Length: 201
Length: 201
DNA sequence: CTTTACAAACCAAGCGCTTGCTTGGTAGCG
DNA sequence: CGCTACCAAGCAAGCGCTTGGTTTGTAAAG
Image (cartoon, rainbow over all chains, first blue to last red; front, top):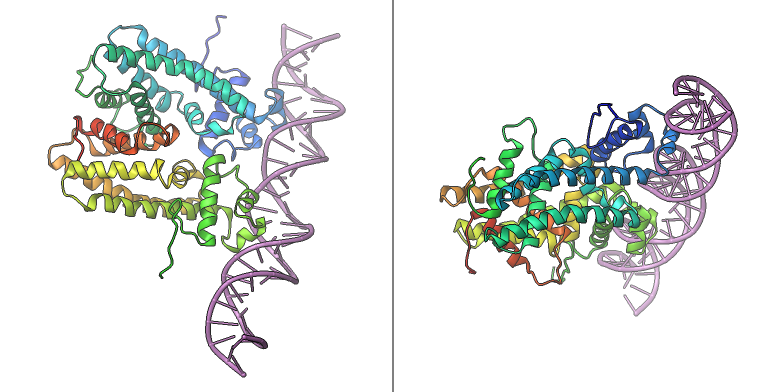
């Protein structure tokens, strides 16, 4: 209860959490298929066979990584729109939250979620898709809110997909040590979506 | 000479070309690592060992797929801006050409180029990066041309990356049999870049 | 038109290695 | 005592790739 938790990649610091965090890092660096169970075991400091005390298969590790990170970031999305009812500020909050997920603290696991999708079994794909649907619904509600205020031009589904492209691709170029901050990038993207400049809050 | 050539995925219809085209399709569907040389051989209708008469290693097949498709589409990009000097029309041409590459006739090979990057050896990564640099320079020249005409707001590098995100992600959702055409999508993206509506040419 | 020559394209078989995963047993702790 | 976490060893399967030999297409020589 009173225990403090350190959260890395959206995972806690239990043996299971540390295992998932290490796996996420390796999956992102090398891809799921090129990462062997021996790689993961070495990273955590145990024997490869011992992994299967925690997870029945290697693919279940991937499944768990994706499940944890999407749950974690769905909650972050919720909190991003909790503060305000202004549609533009809600959208800004969503963009910031998604960028935070993709290039911020959960970047390794998020990258895995995006790029290692087909390594899941069809059944696990279905389960994970259901989690993503919840996440996406938060976006669609906000975009429809924008539309009803006359602040959105074009089809909401298409706009959402263009945003997804811009945010998810940022993991391939954004430099956390560079001059551009996440919030600055969020406002640049926001400007492209609603078609005008927004002043800082 | 007088022979007609059928181009699929930017590859000709020689044994080598058909092999590359089949490999591109499989690499896109299953990923490079999950695709076995036996898969590729079965697709072409030969024995798995016979592949190595054409390519020294499986990774060289991937390298060839990427090289062919990027050369092919760099040429397409060149032709897209050859017709006009108007910066906005040039940009529209580039966006159309890139969408054609990603969700049109070379979609399988382009997807491989984007998603299987780390399966290349470091040396082949370097070589392929050099080819991409030529491709990207065409984009940057056009964007700088836009800027000098006062039609571009914001940093050209960042804008290019946002465009890359929007276009490359489209391979994950665009439906060739749906209502939205490639040219329509191009104009939607164009609108997000230059911030205003453009009428059809 | 046939023969000869030769290289490109391919087959059949399998080798050596890595992979995900199993098994049977043990250390530490409440 | 029992439960969680782990080790040491190794198995069966699948992998990329090799090897030695055979077919096929092409075109000049007779």
